[in-house]
Image (cartoon, rainbow, N blue to C red; front, side, top):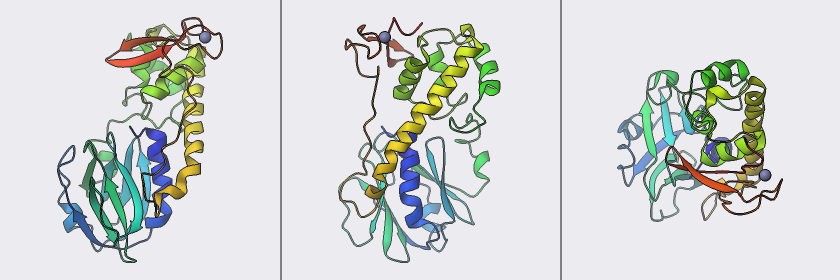
Length: 271
Ligand SMILES: [Zn+2]
């Protein structure tokens, strides 16, 4: 599943190839995604120029003077910029065609993604409005996070995966950040010292930044590529490593379920 680093990499991968371009047409081959594709994408978007491409949480925002196209990649979505004349493959549901005969092509085999249009201020949109701070921004700091943690008895892992607290910390990154910070994933959020929460914030930022940096090596894959843009391998210390030995202390990694999600941790290194 595309996580925040993959979405950020997609944003950086497509932006230089579509920013400033005029949309001349839109082809929708399959409009039933997680929600039906907004009809405005076919009626309003053609004739508009792409001002820029930004990201908020795992939403890509393609901004124009008249509104914003909101794209979420869901479980299996991907985007690439190719010659509009190249025949679509299976699951390539949407083309946004530009004046230079290139197109932004959306592929999504499992169809859990979305393409929605809004003419309103993007921060007022119902999907965006209640989101917490970006993990890599200065807004996500101990002054913001500490009161939220103190107010919750829930496991710390559930708290950092709650998009109202901080966005974009998926299951893999939550497990890895808790390992780096030495915090047990089930520990009650309100029972962790300020010092340790600070360490966790640093860990979240470092792990996500490192993944985005690794993604930078795949930027060329978003253009003229035959296959799926390269989602990159992470170096994982705990996630998916049940019963394998901890890289720090050689104790077998444990797997438990927290809020229906698999969680991995080292019971010696994390408490
Ligand atoms: Zn360990």
